[in-house]
Image (tube, rainbow, N blue to C red; front, side, top):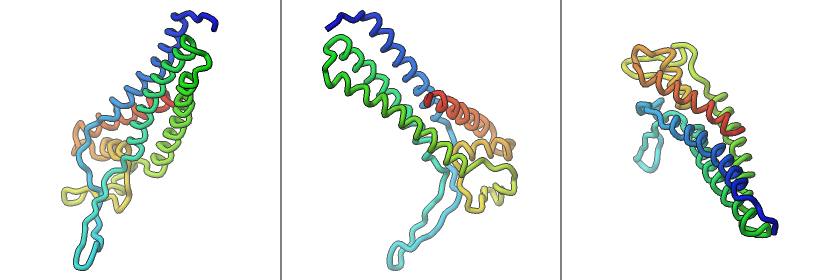
Length: 189
């Protein structure tokens, strides 16, 4: 086996870790945003004989959960890629475990594309409100007329439409969640 320079391996591994971990960590940090518990509606269903159950509908969090999952996948794939590169370059070129570590890196690319597509679809289906006709404040509660919102859409709607009532949390949540979308775009590159 040819001798590989350890500094080259270290530089390539550091590049994989630098590209894989900080942006993912930023996505995780920006995702942890304070928002009050929002109930958009409720419905009573019959769950048995003479029994009813109330189901509450809150903000959609699937796109946020997908971003967190994508960030953790990126971190794990970067670490595995650096380990696999070290095994292939310094232990054995024919080591199946070294080459197998490159598989998660390829899966990471597809996962990030999938997460990005999912987030764009969800946000396209549930955009933020543009007028107080879509979200009405009645008797101390918000009425969305059955429309669901993502966490980002709700925070930005509250910031735009009811900032005097909602205070600082809406501005901060909208800003951080929008920044998280930007970091997701970078993460997918």
